[in-house]
Length: 208
Image (cartoon, rainbow, N blue to C red; front, side, top):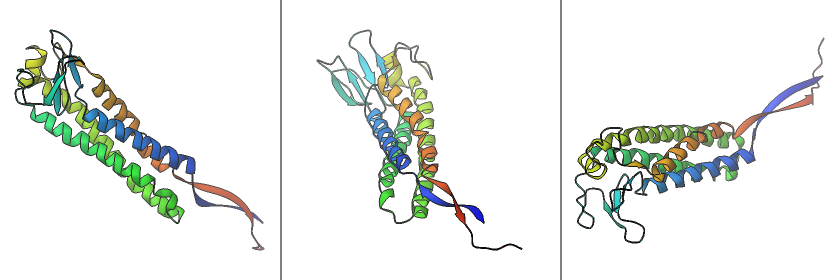
């Protein structure tokens, strides 16, 4: 009689997409983390921009940068917000985890069995879900630092928690946000690396 059964199979297009997206968002996350344009102040002159770990004063022709808390061209950096130290650890940790799992996805083609690839995808997918959670928390926490002495010095006295004063969102923060949103798809892709392949076959069993 004809019987339908199934076996586990690997979707190689999903593996390629999973690895590509993971590595892309990991690079975007780390690039955003080290770019000092999370918030920008265009006026009064000179322009000021700052991120998690660094800040810059001046335009592209005469820009000077330093670590947050250090002075730049006579401009006092004040003390950085303790929240930003936590943001750097959380967002950087999430980006690092994404990079590691992206590299591990490249190992999938050399694994000997589908079950091994499924186990790798399962573990990596769970790690990626944790990484996305860390990054999301970091993005929510970062605006808390706008009430710090440093942010108030650069963005005006009206700057406070979740209020940027005379500053505005920079492209690095937006890049970090987009990278985190895209990274949320990585655990989903990890679940689709293997699938049930249904096949029909003829059984030699006889039934009364």
